[in-house]
Amino acid sequence: MKHLFRAVICVGMIAVLSSGFPVFACAAEIVSSGSVRYVSPNSSGSASPEVSTYGPGGLDSSSRGQSYKNITPAATDWSKISQTRKALVEEAKGLLGIAYSYGGDNPQSGFDCSGFTLYIMKQKANISLPHSSKDQGTVGKEVSVSDMRPGDLICYDGDTSDPAINHVALYLGDGKVIHAAGTGQGVREDVWNYGAVMAIRNVLND
Image (cartoon, rainbow, N blue to C red):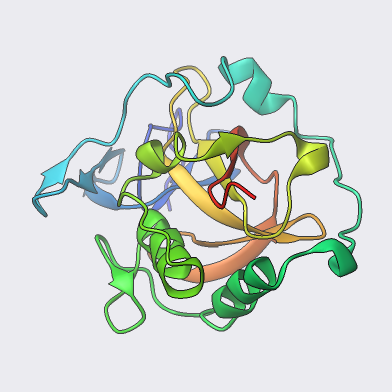
């Protein structure tokens, strides 16, 4: 894919920085070989931009997002993890390889990033989340890296020049996340801080 001069705030495919590093997001539409336009579904099912200035409920600047790059969380002590959280992880791992689908929120249609996390939470914790990575970034309570546990949500910013949440993943424990990474990627695992972390949310409130 031709390198872009900068990452665009997005919710979908993979944007590529001039450095060559990929930035995952949730839904994208390529409009030409030199530019990418990114959109996300709104509540009515139509397309609307998912870019917005990051507000209350998470980290307060894009520089904070970059500060996690060299942090490795402690190994997860699974003896202290609740059965609900273990069930979330098990359910999520069972969906590895499911295709990415813009607006998707089930295994049959495929998933986008927020559709994947809302499906997992509904199935195993009976929690209803909004179908928006930005909105999921304000649900529940914020936790620190030292306190995050399997089943927490980690929200990302694909363009640190304009702090905004545009991607979300589920923390698996032991420094890894699982997410619907984008077109051609599907549900996959990655290191937890592969991108600029904007918020870590405990939506279980436990």
